[in-house]
Image 1 (cartoon, rainbow, N blue to C red):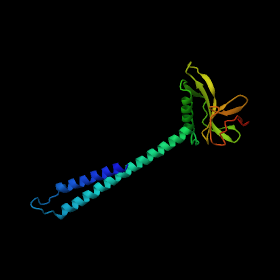
Image 2 (cartoon, rainbow, N blue to C red):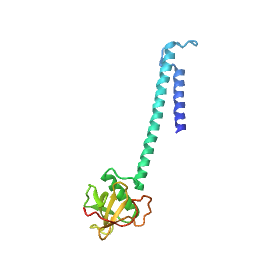
Image 3 (cartoon, one colour):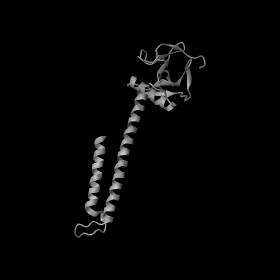
Image 4 (tube, rainbow, N blue to C red):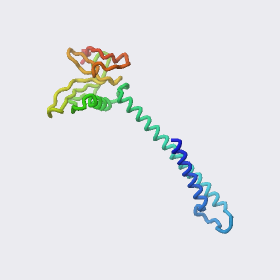
Length: 189
């Protein structure tokens, strides 16, 4: 970044020097060493404009770098699942990407989608997904019923007897909310 800024400044100075040598197209005397005040002023204005342009380019590069850094940070948060989701679309994309990574030979399809948050256990809300694998036939086989926690991004699979378990089972986590133990589904569902 520092090198780019230095190159931009050097290019700007070269431009100013070039303007000064050519006289910027002014009507200055070409005989002798006389430089009119209008030529000197033109050179100053040109230098100011080139300096402003160089400053704008440097600020633009800095803004672009900041935007890239912010975007990468948000992508890492989404991939790690350590943060919640602001929308169903974010949870949907994260869920399909994660399941595709766990099962690269499967072709997943979501059915009976409901974009509203659902209570999947007492005190926890998430997005509900019915996942089907269509890799063997077009009708697809039900792979499972899943929830993606809206606050933590943890994926839970509905098990037998109205339980949910963190998916995949035995996933090690650091949060006390993510214990990986079976939890009873809320009776509100």
